[in-house]
Image 1 (cartoon, rainbow, N blue to C red):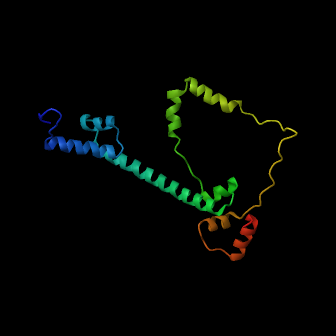
Image 2: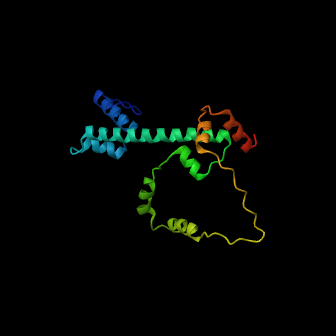
Image 3: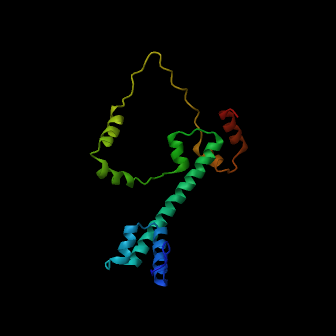
Length: 173
């Protein structure tokens, strides 16, 4: 950068190239500390850093794609109005895993804080209340639906009209 009137900065070609590299690395999700290491630490190989970030981004894209597909299936099921049991949800949506790395990062940082102790004490204090004589009766058992039919229906796949009719009757539609 060269001298300029007050309030202005003049950049030469090398400054602009470096700024573009910094913006490029930021867009890829590198922290400023990581970018500084890439530029200043001779032990850090920029190509290896880019390849590692590419792998991370590809994994994140795949994870987000799976979540988008689950959200789409959930939307379709919500549109049908069908209430699924946990087993039916598993059969329709498949196994969905969640990134819990924040929990492993938070544990050492907050393990001895007052907030952490309070947060852990709350669920530990919860117990199932004893039945009270005036307590509401449990809801009647819901009719069971064939998860394959629910899945097909949620995905808009044409199924036998008698099955659709039976489902609608069971749902009161």
